[in-house]
Length: 102
Image (cartoon, rainbow, N blue to C red; front, side, top):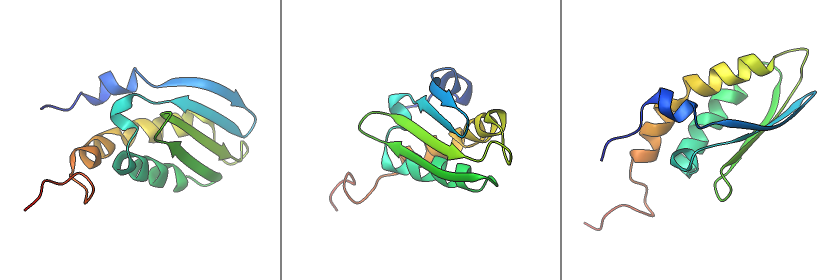
């Protein structure tokens, strides 16, 4: 099974809501899993000014709270796009919960 390209996945990400200091994205199902969430959240939290980045794997929504003086929506989007390849790789790795039995 091949993973979708970064460009095709990035085109599926939608901004659902934006206001000063908060943005909510809808993520494709391929990113709504614990492995991808950990990679994306970690990447966003490394941006100065980001206070919270959390993905709800059940809904596929990513919420980010940030200081709009310290970082921009453009920076968030660029880092999010830059984390997609690693997020897809993390999603493909088996976890203890879905690993095949020995």
